[in-house]
Amino acid sequence: MPRARGGKKHVKRRKKIMSFAKGFKGKRGTSHRIAKQAVMKALRNSYIDRRRRKRDFRRLWVTRISAAAKQNGLSYSAFIGGLVRRGVGLNRKMLAEIAVRDGATFQTLAEMAKEEAVKG
Image 1 (cartoon, rainbow, N blue to C red):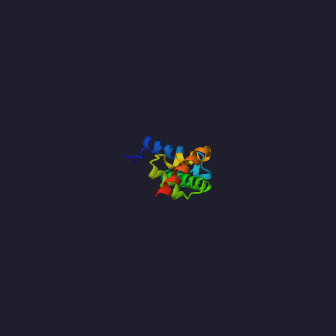
Image 2 (image 1 turned 90 degrees about the horizontal axis):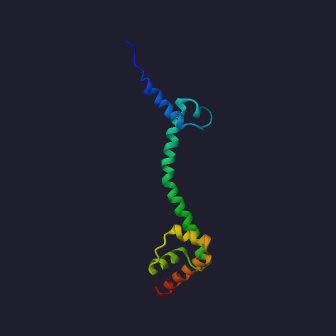
């Protein structure tokens, strides 16, 4: 009796890997054995980078807020601390957007934070 080699399942599995590898350069996109390794690495990196993206954006927002706060005579920590004590519920993403797009509003927020810094 001949050995069964998987048939449709085998072809489907290989096609799936090769469709993931579309656009890869050289044998990474054409050879199944090499493409399988490349796809596994690409999927692992995309998983890791979905988490890294969150860290990177938070770092960018903090940098932008810090630069804008320094222009208004405050450190980042004094600015955030003043807003927290004042009860301003804006997250860092929104604060960074305000700092980039609307300097006057950010200046108002900085004044509020300064008042709290003087009190506390």
